[in-house]
Image (tube, rainbow, N blue to C red; front, side):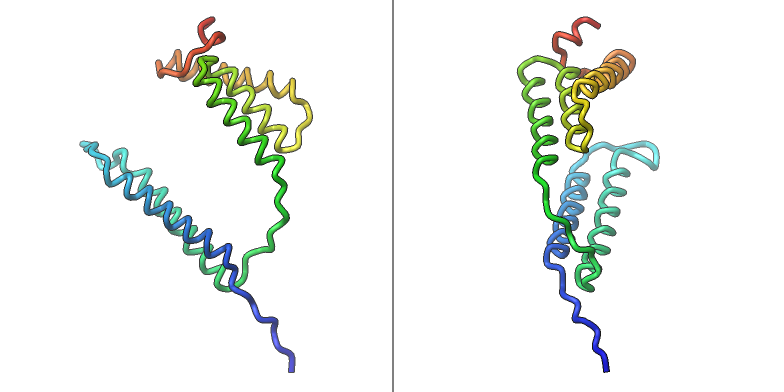
Length: 157
């Protein structure tokens, strides 16, 4: 008689399910505080409801998989990509705060993120990021007239 190996409850998976559930509750609570009324059936409250429902479904699925022990084994954590992306984001925030604008900060974030994903052409990625940031700036800032943080490059346009 053979016995099947005992599956263990994945505690980290249960913790992730609880975090997803809490995040769904936070999104729902924040949506319930909106005072915007729409004359149409679809208003600004629809997307937070969809996001909350999706997070609840993910929490349920993750919780069931964690209880069954069906979650895949996790790989070891490499901190380098995380530090690169968070560093790029911190630089973006700092540059916007210091008045260097949207384009330069976004270009650095793009290059840092592509480096985190394994690409080794930092200067090329910096130029690609600057081009994409310029496109987004022109689209949002000039065409849609949204206010984006202006720096030395933005003042040229």
